[in-house]
Image 1 (tube, rainbow, N blue to C red):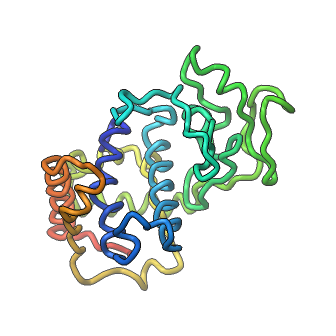
Image 2 (cartoon, rainbow, N blue to C red):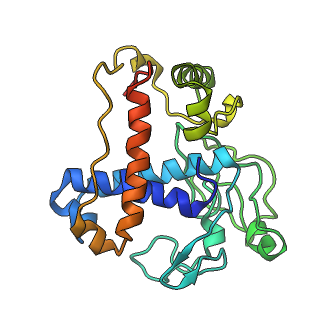
Length: 255
């Protein structure tokens, strides 16, 4: 239901991101979290969720909000440091999976767009510099022309009939009022709803117990990240409300 990257980030940051760090504990709930191998798995999943959100809204270049350096801008340059991926690149040049140095995609996610979506005239040069990644090789404007045609190797969303069936079950379980409130992406337009699907395990994995509520972020975690405690609490209540609605419906999670 988020219509801006800033609100989507808060929904992720104040729930699943922090909850997994705190749930695993150890290094994961400290400033040394990156030493735990699960750190990369966790953040890859968050990246996948962001990519699905970008596709659901068609908002590949939505980059808003404020940070310690002021308003976010696609022309911002990523810290040029060997420890930071894509260091020295502009934000705009790494916003879309499957192009340039961002040479990957997720099997359960949509395919990259057929051409790199620039941000208007200001972003035309960055968009023109991008080429679909082929066979693991990164192609840029230095050795190829402007990006045209679909990415030839990266797989996209599969099992769409099963995704549509799951979306239909969700709508039937919750009713239109709750669907429009919490899952406006459904809105009668099922193809816009992206959901990971494991058909071969689905019937065996249906849960009979209620979905758990997301844990609250601890005061130490909130302080370490400089979060606003009131906004954290507001987003936590929203997340708990969604769980409450799902648990009081006929919907059964396949996970």
